[in-house]
Structures are given as C-alpha cells and as structure tokens.
Length: 335
Image 1 (cartoon, rainbow, N blue to C red):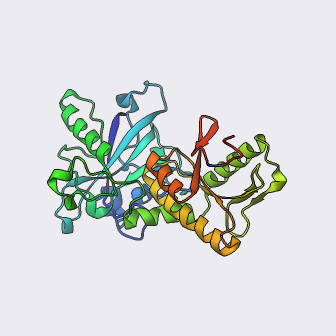
Image 2 (tube, one colour):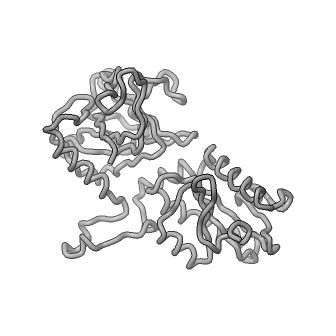
Image 3 (tube, rainbow, N blue to C red):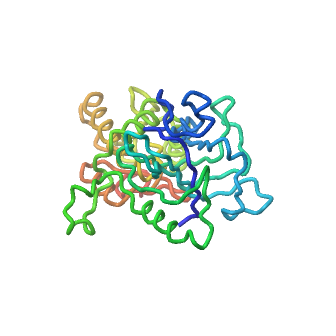
C-alpha cells in the first residue's frame, strides 16, 4: 500500500464549502471567525480534482520524508489521511475524517485554480470522505499540523491505519451484522450508499456536466468511428440522453455516459444510469430500443456487469487505449 501522510484540520460535517463554522481549527480559523481553507477539501471541482488545503503552519511539506528527492517539487502516489478533533457535543478526540488516494503532495503550495487567494498542498481525483456520524477511527498519536509516520516506532500505528483504509466499506454497517457473519458478509457495490455520498455524487456528476464527461464521450465516439460507425449515424446529447447511434445490424443503441474513476462511486453511477436509460427508453422511444449501454470511466466489479446484464443493459469502459465490457455489449465493437 502507498506511503501515508497525515494532515490535521478543523472539524466539518462535509468539507463541501457548506456555510458552517469550522470547529477545533487552528489559530488561522480562530482569527477568521471559524473560516479556513480546508472548507472545500472534499469538494470535487469541474476538472475532476480535489484540492487539499493544509493548516497555515504547513508552509512547506518535507516530501523527502515521503520518498521524494530533496530537489523534487512534488511526489505522487501518496495516501493522504485527514484527521480532525471532534466537537465537544461528540465528546472530543481526534479521528480520521477521510483520505485522498493516489494523491500528489507538493513541497510548496501552488495557487488554488478555483479559489482566488487560496493555496493548496495536495490534489487527487480519488477522495473518500467519511460521514460525520461514522468517523470512529481514533488517532492516539500526538502531532500538530502533520505527521509523516516514517519512524520505526510508528510502524504498528501505520499498519493499523492502512488496514482500516483497505477494509473501509461505506455501504455496510457491521453493527447490524451478527458476529458470526462479519467475516463472510459481502456487500454488492450496487447497494445503498449514505445520504452524504449520494448528495456529493449528485452535485458533482448529475447536476453539472464535468469536462471528464465530455472527454469520455468523445473518446467513445471516436472509437466507434474508428471501427466503422459513420458519424452521420450518431445523435449527440439530444432529448436529454448522451448518445444514440445505429450498430452494424441497423439496431438503435442508446448510451448513457458516466465519467467515474472512483470505485467508491461506481454503484451510485450505475444506479443513476440504469434509471435514466429505462426512463428515456420508455418515455422517448416507447421501449423500442433494445440495446442500452452504460459507458463508465473505469472497470466495474464483475458483479456490476452481471447485475446490468440481468437487466439487458450492457457496460463499456476504456482500458489501455481500448474498450472492454460485456462481450454482448455492442455488436459494433465486439465483433
């Protein structure tokens, strides 16, 4: 598992820019009436990135302690763990509130691309925020703004955190599972997510169209054209759906595009896409289209492919410059 880097921030329910004062922040937060740069640490911006702001005291991060060279300006592939102290109403104590997977950590803070006057220290496209009521991993290590965990005495603690992150599943409450089932209970990636995750996904991917959506759709369209589909047989973003085209057997294909690159959001993306395809097919085409396809940004679990196949809905996703998915997905692609 990648190297861990810990950042301590103030406490917020969602870190989505909500109009709530930060609790238990540092001196900067206190001087600014409960406001601070970490308010948007788990907000996914239009370019698909999350930008992590660190406390004011972290003017420079010693990334050589994370494996970078002394002259390097940044290091990639780090798991950044965000911690914060619970408010008094939750009995205090420092807990993990979320983390960035495969993050880039900068030695010096670049300017934030969307928030004028703000700087950031870390960015990623894959972030996990734990709902406020489920933050239960307490940090017993004592540190101020950040913690590198690179000493011999920290190995056991780092091992425990890595185990927690690897085993974290937002779709299951183990308190409802009988003790003798805990090691065998398995949750489908399509099961219900928390209200917080649903709100985050909806805001970031359904209410607004991100540049990643257009990139993925164009990539898919170009793939179709390269394999013989005439551009004149395609209809783009018309009547609410993303793409419609005619395959080599002269059958209509209806496509919904979901530019998801985070495994934690695949279940939600598939759920939205299934509902949209079925709705469009019924109300716009009187269920005449028999080929419904979801184009997604990363490989889904096999159980997701099996699930959508059972509904006669196919999946396609990019991999190493090619496209893969259920072998029945599109006659046009999988000849």
